[in-house]
Length: 490
Image 1 (tube, rainbow, N blue to C red):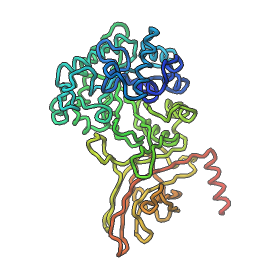
Image 2: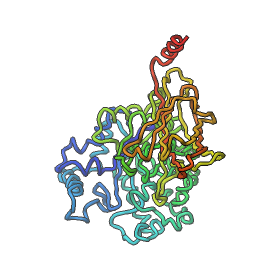
Image 3: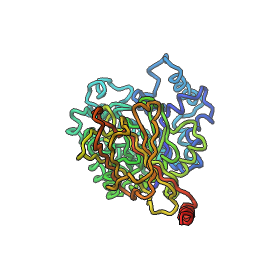
Image 4: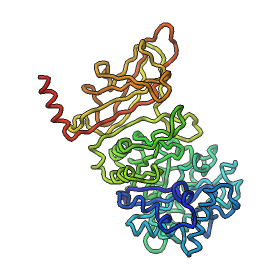
């Protein structure tokens, strides 16, 4: 049965066990829960594992750190000592979080990365050339961990994280044989569903993180359609650990439609970054309220059952708590200023990331037009919208170029356009910012067309559309202000 949720995910490490100095105070031990309490977050998801172990005293798997002492860095030492400081007081580090979540009226999801597993024969790992889940020992081991999380702890759900590979762990199956061995993972999911739902007392829920595109799931051996048709999962989160960019254009319509046919929930993932520091002259930049609102609103428009986010700029303060408060209610994201942006495609296909339309390389050709699409949830006819700006970041454009930009087939030459340099490489790139006064986007899918009709005779190289952003600004008195301006002109 579908269920509305607002989920915050904590990976146990970066903003928790790695940062607090031991011995851990209870206020520190509760901090992942307390920092999101009082917002719309009603479900706390906790990453209980890394490739080299589990962040709790498992009886069936390897507790993280127990095989790696003496530690070679401070954060790993903190992690181990923090867990041990709780255990020495008779407290289970995982149960402490579960109890605190329940005290704060949150459900608890134990999220398990599947592709690697501390304490097992390393030769089985796909990362070491092994066959992963084709080995029965691997399947049995991970199923035991899933069962432990569902039965030894009073969790509401266990999440199978398949999409952490390859950025966060190895794949479950060797990519060379994954499509042919998809039934192996389907059997595993089926066994996990039996274990989680068949526990004594209330039945547990089984969820899965999968990839956003059918192609990536197929390549990884994830037969999502069969899982849904057999009712093996209660919820899905389409995501990619290799892509930390917030993406308001994530292509998940296919999975929402397929899941809802089986009454299965889908939660949209709101990734944490606007920039990840990989591009020249940029640093890591977390998403703003306006960017998060745009992505959340697009996900709601795609009919998701809730939203999940994580890794926000930490410590979480008023800005982050405001975002988390808005996420749980589609009405709160509907009429607020939004900043849409399109991400760039990954340069390395091995990162296992779904495709993107940018950048677009364009050579001078009087007859050639290049097109990209984007989706927005705003209705430009809404009287509360005061201003819409389209920003295009173009590399190697010069004033002598004959460059044509069209929105849904309508030329933007009549719209005011301001040019200004980008970042610290103005010699390469230029931002073009259009005020869309008369030529406006539509709610839903829009297209942008670009054409480089002509270049100076002495310049032959191509230009590149590197970024496209759309800012929709809401104003409480937008309609009245527009009427006043028209009256003044008259």
